[in-house]
Length: 449
Image (cartoon, rainbow, N blue to C red; front, side):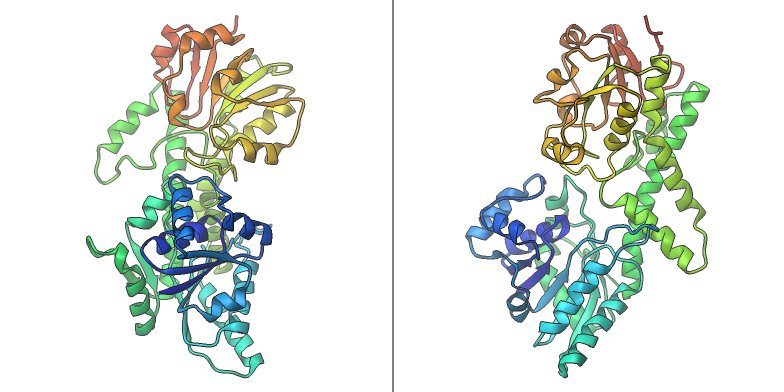
């Protein structure tokens, strides 16, 4: 099948590559000529496990092409995906300018019956606006071309996106067109052989499903962070509580890890956008308000613990940071807790030595050159001379460090575990002061000497 995908960002590139992997002819369109040229040379603009190899293989095989020529890509397409960004506006609502710009481009060039697919995360009612934008351009041209607009939201987890795309939990298709549904079923047939994964619904329900899914997951994270803050005050250990509630199959273990707050390109903007949509329709979503408020506060929790440990004075302290990406297996620092913490540390007069296995290039772009920031080549280089270590991202390489060497390198032996990956008693036995998230009074808190 000939498929055109507008957008070579996270969603567009992964989706196009996986569709090419099963034999489709894919044209990925982007207005960024430099990015397109880089992709055609094999330069992958994002880090995602397994993606680079698939892009190279399918590009070499001729099934995956990158172009800035929208007209030519549309002319060959049976199905056209819109997979461009929907960043938050100043009021928290999703900015649809890129989506609607693509819709107008489709309307200016479409010449044969096609299915237009909204893959971007968009508010309820966007399909109607896309349909109207395409129809308006067709009217200007004075031509009639049959087309359908389908909602087909993505459910890709950063760090597992290739696996999620090749072996999806579900494939949500929102449409009232039987013909469009059959085209989409044919496209997704290679991903649907083991058991039925396609969930059919109307367009607006499909649009809301994406937001509801992300809002639910964000709610679980904020709920556990709320419980962690309670546990800390009442002397309980949230990790024991997590195991206790996770064993209930009605709750489960997924997304109930307390930590430094959620980030990334999805949860923050999608919770805000859903909140804004609700308010536009006269409803105040109190749970969503709380989810956002708890997350904002949680990103400041580690700084509060640092102040507590150092008696409120962080001037001239050197803080080592392990992990800058918002989660493991990605280089994405959008809305990452690291951005909040580092800004607070610098505001308090501290210096930072940081390491992340994948996000160092991104960090250099985000923070620029600063006298109070050293981006280190490996974890132990970051802790050298540090007054404290803060763990912000639970990369596997951080889980079993050489504690003896750490003590030798650090000026002060204290660890702030923002992801609860360490056993507090093991660190204490090795001579470290330990601070976790919601670990309670059962964990000794040595005073500064």
